Length: 332
Image (cartoon, rainbow, N blue to C red; front, side, top):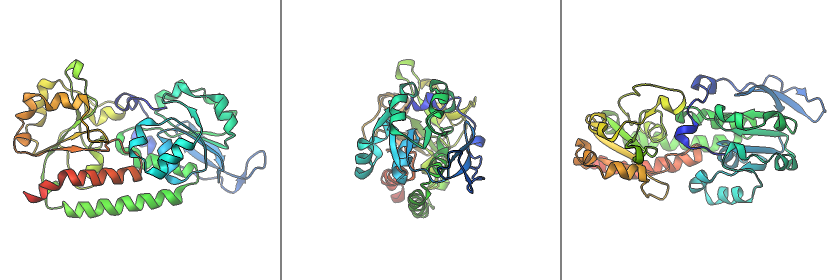
């Protein structure tokens, strides 16, 4: 049920909506069928009455890796190939074993398969505009549906918490969250005399070489937000901010590379989980304009792996990858 990151987030609901409270006002109540306690949960699609303690959950989109990592009682999921390289062996085994009730795209939802999974809760983790590709009413005839989709990239922290909360899986979620925060604090201390004093620039993976553009990511974007937890600061801001990821990244022409990063003390760029370089990024690295940037000429250009992390467990891998890449800064 995935969509291309840089396009899929465009037009998603604002960050303010994401930060709206989850709501648990009816935990003492019972559902109409008398099957157990319920509560009212604030989601992208409204205030939804859901089981207070779900037993059979279907998850799609960005909710898939969150639910698996949190140990939610899953009975069906959408395909989520983009996240496979960041899953642990145990989580990947769980992912492969679970029944797939939807494909990579929202429109590839198999309603019969969802019904056969007999869920008591359905958590949809796609951007708000993509909800139009899903027959919500049909899903609601099967079980309560809560839509908790992505907005700006850095909001994965709040989103993953809401998704785990909906499924009643916060205990294991909090373990991963605490582990991440402890590691981030450790690395922030390690780099405190280096990173906060530097101006950084980042080249993301979603430029378009065919159109002669590159992706510049600012604070709060996919390639930058986790490095910020170490003290990194990506200077500048989007010239014409838009909704979703357009608020924290833009797509200038390659000719604008010198103007974009002339002030950068350090350059970072996104690479694939296996360390290989995406074609859109290689296009930038091959440019003479890139090679003439002050930071690049000074040998201060570093690759970042796992920039698509959207769970605390995945983000720990990102922290470690960033630490490995930026380690040379400590020796200068």
